Image 1 (spheres, rainbow, N blue to C red):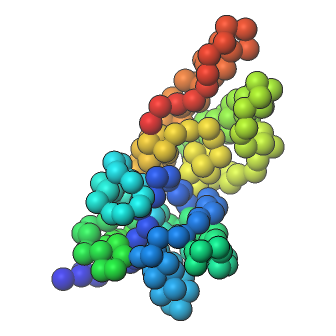
Image 2: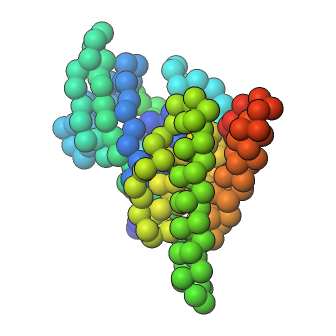
Length: 222
């Protein structure tokens, strides 16, 4: 039984996290997902994306997360070997309530997962905290680029709204998939600000060590 606010969606488990507003290119080559894509292009052009916690993207049998993001197909072109080259953009966050049989591709009963309303005495404090994170991430990306790492340009643009901007910082930063998944799952803006503060702090320490000439690598562990 599907209740009000719930719906059935085609699902695409991946080894990466799609965050709201983020762009994601996909190469669709497995038979079941080619079938799914044809169905979607004739219909809603929407599907859910969830992270694979354990297992492989190919063949099924993987362990999937229960929080993901709805994706909208913005471009789809036939590729070699009957595959597809697809571009999608993240929309709203979703909670998977129940997985249905993969027949022929994964589907699930889902509902939207909005943020929990928080009582904020002074919204400017939250905004100031977010702006500080943006500035820190810009500096971090600039330093990583100086160290020869391939990262997003430090001149990136993002929303000034912390509710949306925290997702964008997570998508633009050099974070691992499990770090991004923890942030995607957080339904309070204050929690996402705290997670980003921790992620950036870890990376800043590593980068400072490297720039002092002590060597090492940069990156967070998922």
